Length: 318
Image (cartoon, rainbow, N blue to C red; front, side):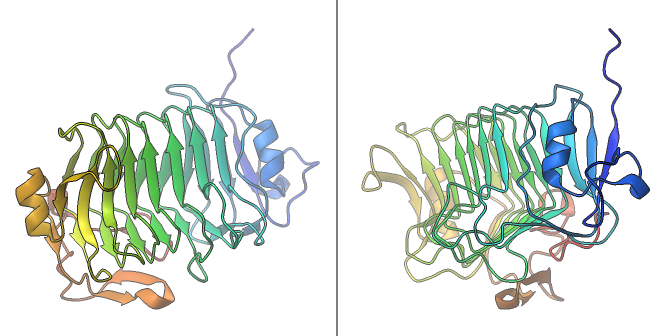
């Protein structure tokens, strides 16, 4: 048999699932139809508008042959949970999946395991997406929860109002970079178990929690931290919130720790170039996390780029 030749499929809210999906004029209508049809190497382009099924492909991709779900053009492609559907990306052992440029909105208010949930999925990528668009997600649910997903890339995303913004549970070699997170509840970023090779850089944490825990929490029984972290900005936080800490046998067995960035730098040896300052966001309460003139995050990231999500309003990616 000849190997599968990659196909680009199109989705539109005005499409037809009985069409072939292979041109903009014969687009499918639902994410569910695309999830049933994709094979390794395929790409799904979501046109502007709202969709109401989770991204949950029946098969995964392969190394060098990813399955990609991507926004088409500059319009907003929204995966709308209608206040009842979660997760909106669900990947049980579905390897090499990319979601890019999508908005995830209207999650259930009563809690859920994650807006994006990966389980034993190699090489997952979440790029330039947004959780919470028209209003911050107020439910008692997580943003991105990954379990045993080595090599994951979480980059360029805005996560607004979830319980934990990103949880990496036994996800070595993951990259968490250029994200802007705000108005969380417990921890903003939680790293659990094996974190060898995890890299945390260029992120902005603005009111990352609503309770005085830690913005970055690392759960690890040993004293040695094996991730790297630098060029991040810790913005305003509720009183007594730690910038970061490592907890061992329990949250009462803590160290290294840092109530301030200076404490964390001295105790952990990490975040040499990170800052603790107001990032001067345009209108964070209304969901506009654009950096304004004079922001200390402009050009302060690794390699001289801006910190935080580089396109916080989800319009374009340069």
